[in-house]
Length: 120
View (cartoon, rainbow, N blue to C red):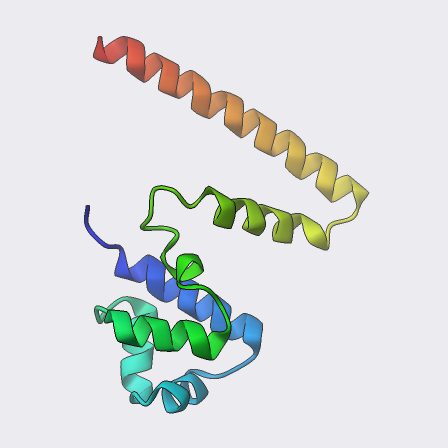
């Protein structure tokens, strides 16, 4: 399995923005240059495990959260994200989003079933 460094960088950027800190501030905390931090967030640089742990600690997030796009068993992270998406929605938005999720789930399962029949 190839590691998706762009997805990791995007997760880092999202966590940083949610925490309300700049790339420069995180870079200073973890002792890297701001340009290196920028390259990590854009996926241009492969982030090392020690740096990833330092970033997670600086942003008060779990490494699991930063890696969930690369790990097959990350259901709990995505369920938490779905809950966060719905948290600030009004009644109408929640109903509409749940309907969309149900439709998407049905389409995905139909597609999986069709693929499985095709592969036999």
